Length: 406
Image (cartoon, rainbow, N blue to C red):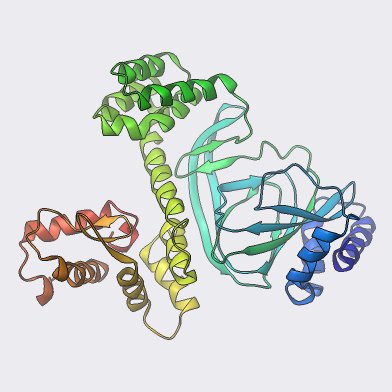
């Protein structure tokens, strides 16, 4: 066992014991212990990994799939200390059934806090309400953050570096604080460990019908939607949304769901659209490794407004105006495709009679124009009609870059 974490565990145990093992006091005890002896300053990560690989005398390891991977460095019946490695991980928006604190030992992350208002339980495992961001911040190496169990601490992390490593001092479980909901903004909370095997198998069977292009697919889905309860109907919609859009049956299927569930279904379209948007950005990070570009992706996913995005850019890169930094990233991320220039998932319109070598400058110029408010077109866009400028705005507004132009 690593001696640093053994001593850290003993410190936490002694202090918590003096507090009569109060769950309310544990987050502050954990935070203070981590800040007094920061793992970022006292642990050699390479040496820790070597010791873990070669020394059989290690704490009990869990079967958890959280982390890439999770390593338990200290274990006690009441709490434990874990190291979470993240290679390309982005956590869902979630709450916890445990309390404690986490410390950024290596790397950095974008950390977003949320609240869930006007929650209405549909089942013990599914709620509708309003998921709202409270604040967003940059966590650099050495930062420690308390964890409070239950709905008081709803958050997400977008890890920027490869790897990012966090040290978590946490209780085993805080009674009465479950389920450990995940949140799908702007309107859904769901229990991710709900074991609904029938719904899982139905989704898999629908995937088979999709792959073989069965013509009865949309009819079957709509029949299911007409019969299923709200919770299971939502998951079927979420699973089938992409294919139904491709075959032109999405609006009618969504309409069937809304007709069945009325006002309860009001927030479902926006929630499903947001799921798609976040999944697209998560998918991009698998092919984007440059830290600045990952930082940009994190902001595109999580920043609630353009002003918030610019503020975080200015905090991390203070030597140039944030708009210039963003445009530099957009230019660096631009690439030629068979259909023309693309910036991430924003594709230059095929309908424009613009030579390929002229598209990048025009595309970046249009993005700058929209970021600045889009009131008066600059000279670089004078050759375009009002309809073409409107189409360019729509391209950005329908892409991962939309926060920059709305």
